[in-house]
Figure 1 (cartoon, helix red, strand yellow):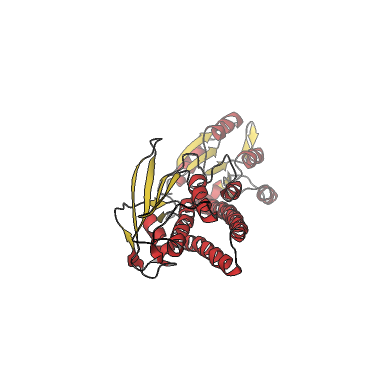
Figure 2: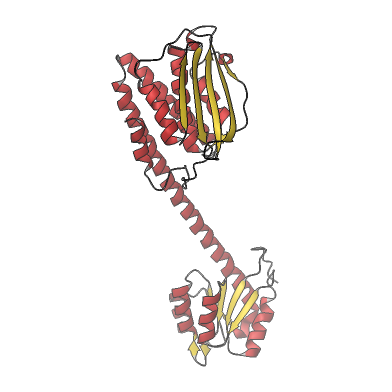
Length: 362
């Protein structure tokens, strides 16, 4: 008795057989399979076509000769309608030439009615081969999806890199300043991508994004104090975008803000609450204290533009920058999930992500 472990679900078998006795004998041998298969019998062409139209089958068994039909025609129909379904001839008369021709046209196997003991094993083998083909096809489709997704992300990343390179150059006065600013921004992108890679490019914890980005700039991490915080995870697009914002905030704090002084501190906190549209959103605050006295800038540089545009375009949120004398404050609100985003990395299907990257810097 065949010992099949291929599935917990019974196989669905379409049996094309006009003889009642032969059909009963075939069903008796099929009962050796475990679990016992579900068999639907057709005796003529119209019933055969109706069965193929009604449901999907795992295997088709067909006699070679029928009163108003023939097995070769049934094979051709099956090959046209359900090409991936195994087709096995079960016939009392099937010469060598007919057998060779049936294989040439796509038959999986044939079993002589005089040797019906082979039937269960033949069906079991056909099911196993069919599952293997289906799994290979699924893996190949998944691979193609991953390649397309990777290509999409690389294109978006390169577009952002080119925009950052160009705009950083315009906002820098010396080569050293240009290199420093550019390397910081590219490092923030690389760190975010590395973090996402560790999570198999799924979601990343907001706190992990913060630690990874801040640690690249601030050796004394105790100067950045995380207060009120709730567990929040970001999708890949949001994680990369928010890391870019954090990079600009940290760079600004080191050059001009609280972290420029030894006693300066940065306090971070965030919560989740509904925004004005009633959508769950992250409310994030970056607050500097004990730094040098600051005054509002007369004009905004690329860093400020990058923060504002990233929050507005990439995160679909809002940002408020407060240059208070007691310390700089940045309040950010962005939805946890953009309802208009449908693809793997959150890119709106109605507009190109590459174009958004260009909008970020213009």
